[in-house]
Length: 217
Image (cartoon, rainbow, N blue to C red; front, side, top):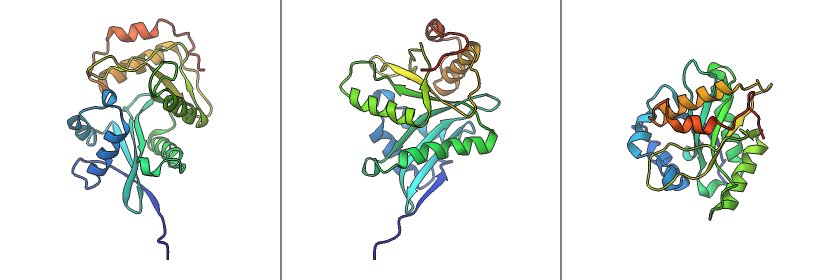
């Protein structure tokens, strides 16, 4: 008799959780080296109150995760990472994980726009087709690109960061996003997610081509 397959969700709140190693393995295997944070930082994030890490489990085995930055008293959140174990992709789990992650944010503090850092498919690269598929995946979920913004990933590492887009997951109805609001979000992300100065000159450079209100494409 084939055993029943059961999928469940549970939060990861400590690097001492028995599920941490399985979560971290998927993180390392799914993220390009240039876009990863050190293990010490990931361990620290598990205990931060402004982060939510949600584990997707198949019969109690971790097969995926989402990691959202959810700053208190702010009007946005950031989906920093999301991945499904390679053995369980193309089963619709990524879509369910994405929706469940934002549902959890909404149930805790109300619906807010969600930002996503996504490798741009407009940059010539060896993984360009993967980037295209990823962008199509997020668009099918209702995400749109912030028009005119060439997002600079401020994660420290060797070599230049990849060209990236900043996408927006739209709550319904979609509020008007003002230019100053987007600029504030970028300053919070740079300072709280990447430990950069909120006055980092890269933010002013990114904002040069942004209209008011912000356009989505």
